[in-house]
Amino acid sequence: MKNWLPVVVLSLSASVVSAQTNVTVNWAKTIATSHATPTLQVVVNPQLLRGAKLHDSTFSSLHALGADYVRYVPWLPYPKQAVAELQAPTASATSWDFTHIDPTLDDFMQAQAGHSVVMNFSTIPAWMYKTDKPVTYPDDPNQVFWHYTQGNDLRDPSMKEAAAYFARLVAWYTQGGFTDELGKRHESGHHYHFAYWEVLNEIEFEHNWTPEAYTRFYDTVTAAIHAVDPSIKFMGLALGAPSTHPEMFEYFLNPANHRAGAPLDFITYHFYAEPTAAQGIGDWQYTFFDQAEGFLHTVRFAELIRKRLSPATRTDLNELGIILPEDGKEIGNPGYVAPPPPDAYWNLAGALYAYLYVELARIGIDVVGESQLVGYPSQYPSVSMMSYATTKPNARYWTLKLLHDHLGDGDPMLETGGGSRDLAVQAFLHGGHRTILFANKRNHPLQIALPKEAAHVAYVAPSTGEGPVGERDLSSPALTLEPFEVAIVTLK
Image 1 (cartoon, one colour):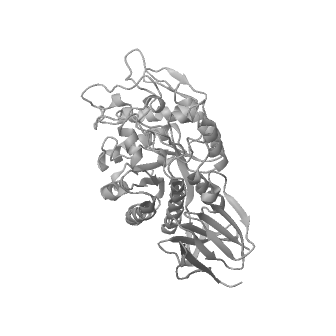
Image 2: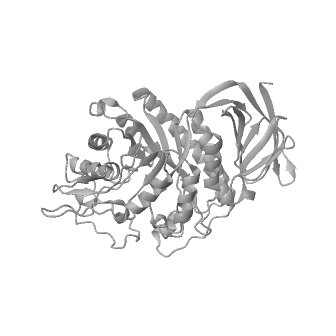
Image 3: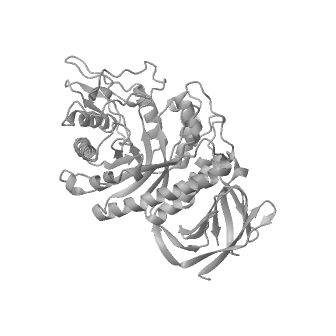
């Protein structure tokens, strides 16, 4: 068997064929071992409720995926679905209520049976903060409300009140119940296993945490949760704008800034490509990947800090996606309904995720999480992996499933040459099989001359639509990548 296998790529633009690009794979030279687990996040919203249009297909798709490290986030726009104690306790009563929280979480845990989860109850009860006046919220649990997270200073400077809240949440779901502030026992019957707990979300935006305050809060919360369940591991930071906050990495990753024995298991942070309102898909095919390059620079910078200060800490990039300008219009203008993006957008978004997966695996990132499973009109529809119109998984979901089923933690990455601004390409060894991942970054086809050993291709492309991953045996050493197609070729 030859160590070097040539792959010749021809680019088609209209009827003009560009110069050939030779892609080579040295199967004898491993450049890295991928530890990148492909996964996703599930953000709680009304479409996950039982009886909602997307409920059944969403949880069925999640179960069929079978991913680990799936992040589950009850968050601020729906206080009754995210906060279990909406009123401060009095001398005679508490307000603990899981009525609108338990059913969705139960369905999530059933869909994830046998696979690890990352729990992130990211919203602290508003009454725990100092505010000019009490924070009100809708009586309707399904009415969106974007102004729940008010205030920057906890009323309890020791932070133990908030930490006790999270410890009781953990006890409710993992220990069968908890004892409240007045000494009353609340029985849940739940005995779930949470492999990971992430402490808060996008801390620069939600309550404007400083590195010092967040680190102290993290230490207080993790100690309280470990007193309930010592097996839980933790994730921290969840930065929404990592490139502008290097001080967060520097301070949080320094063990000297933590209590003795504080667990520094994972750091987390996010990336969304965001085009301007004037751009269309012809521009997006460049803007998204250019912005991704900037994010990758941030990742390399953060990795240098992590390796210097806390090399045993791992990294989970658990929100990767695209937010189109129309999403913001829907949120800022109630009643406005954004036109759907062109169908090709979903394949382009899938190609972006595949590209990020390859680059982040090369860097050494442990978990690569696509955001998010369910969005819909008024709730970040451009970020969704499920179609609100058809209730089917879209190309973003199927790209994730393609990568999940054919690549993973422990795969050797082979020396691969010939990738370009138009084409991402990387060879892996997966389960003893030689595979090559291709992602077409452009809105035109690419012709690929494959090595004679190429036997099979699995792919997500415009032609597969909202259907499952396409698969076929290869009868000739030639392959046409459709616009924004992601394909994995397996060799004999």
